[in-house]
Length: 282
Image (cartoon, rainbow, N blue to C red; front, side, top):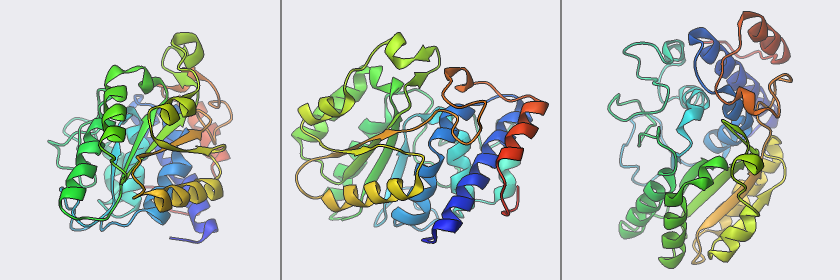
């Protein structure tokens, strides 16, 4: 999908999916999901090379993606369904008993598109580095993508994998960090300041890109394409992506309070009124 109007429409519809899924079970994480919507829609509908069916768990000869900040699963599930991995009607089962769409993605449910369980934060980059090394060993020239949150950078395992990737010249991986400045207990600067993230990755030997507005679809596509062109030059790639928590729904924007709570009936209707789409709801 390359048409900007189509992508923009899909972004809006994905946001509708997110708020409806979380509202239906009064459980989930809408804030970060809404903030990363442009990124995920662009990645799966404009940038990555993959085949949704039949789903290849090993990811051989295709680009693959790992979600490290697994709590934004409503976004992940919506994007996967609308990219053709499974029927969009399954979105109505989110977080329900016996559903494949658990609160955090799991592998034992055998949901197409999900290659790792990502309930515990901090592990996704390590897995992605391993997958990228496997591609190198198999002479597979495709790219491994991974998304993590800025609060997640407070996990020690992140930095072990960052050191390893640079030391081993894992140059077929693109890590994007959602820098929205919020986490479950407040602003990251108040909970545990993480300093200048780009300078850190530069110092650790990564090639870095800055995405000033991760809620602008044109900029998302442009930076992702620039990052992909930079692969193969001996350094892992990191994109520092500025986003707005709760983007697209005015009363959720910029507040850590919407990290992990669901809208009530009235709030849902307010949100949906702001998210006009001609694409069919699930």
